Length: 272
Image (cartoon, rainbow, N blue to C red):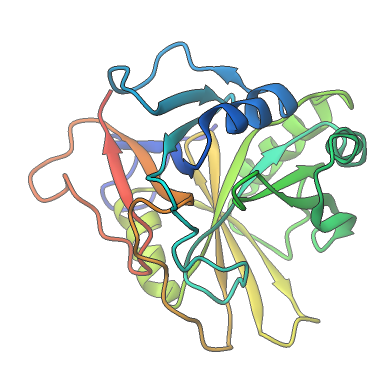
């Protein structure tokens, strides 16, 4: 992958997505889902000491941190409407969406969006984990409506073409909804150095739906924006579902130890 060039402060401190934290109500049930059904592996090298109620899984490119939530926890105001700001879903790349979806269907998992051909000429399907966290399977490579970095787009295509049809899930992206694209790009592109790969314009969507894709290390940030008004992100830090994104960082200088996402996405820096 090409280095993060052409952006202030780029490339040498923030190297991409380290892990995503997910709150769960029943750790064993969630491990059966993520490890048993999806096929993710226990992480060999977690970025923190072992602690009760926390399980680390390796999604090959990023980790998932499953954290036991307090009793009677809920999704804490998170709703499955893309117009709500903040974290929306985690995307997992597979060799064949239809094949992998059948495995889920046989296990009784229901789909928010059935396997389908989508804008950008990829196959995708959306489903939920046992606590309602929204996940996506995707295969192929995106045909962007506008390419910002041809090298990164070509790399994505090459990786997709080399992935066998029976390949299991690996981490691909985190999606978030932004109310102010300029402010979001100022953080992720200009400060953190994540270059824009390309853009998709969902011209048939009456909400004025656009997705910008940024390369965040080996993973991707999908930034959703709409012309329709958006609603605030949930704020409960111990809720079920998507809680936080951790970014791998090196020698962050004074003033960069903490990051503030303009749409309320909890961000953490991991220096290990």
